[in-house]
Length: 269
Image (cartoon, rainbow, N blue to C red; front, side, top):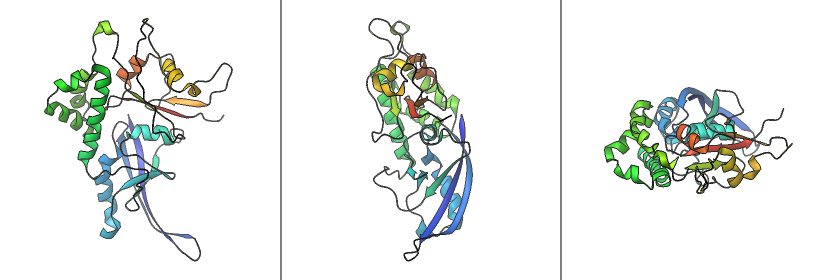
């Protein structure tokens, strides 16, 4: 799945006396990006496009913004869209900035190696939850590199040849040890909710998405006869709450092996 993204660059100059904004320059570019990738993987392409109309002194550390919100580079593109713009029509219009990096909101990302390190850290954390880290520890460095290069170059077969091993488990165990998941809310000051959660209860009950939300965020599930307040979105869709959480983890996790769940306000009729 891919998202059409339109990136704009706007430079504004404010008059101290009139407090009005004067538009100096506005240019844009259109990109078709994988939901599972990261915005920082296209920074070179974006910078090359806009540098044609920029002075060298105008280029500092790049960052992206949507409707006043700085977009976290370490969140997958699809997650950012689900959190901030899932109820808007494509293309998704975002802004790129080359100055005034928001230190209070974003981590620095000086190179692709930082993104790769973050991605592999997530892979290792997810495998620790699923297999006590056994699968990642058995992989060689070239296998780790294949996972990353498959994601970076949007080569599914290359990525899945390695990632398949991370999705396996003994049949008798009926699932992973714990489900790697993170629950996000755009209106919350907390980055995300992440706790230990097993796909199957000690008495053999297969846990569902609804079971996970009841334990982690009960407000996301409407009570009897109550109007739905929130949408539960994974990869741009609303799975049924009765869906087994193990199945979702196997089929709707991002390449970092985490199930990223967005809880967003429901649309008004």
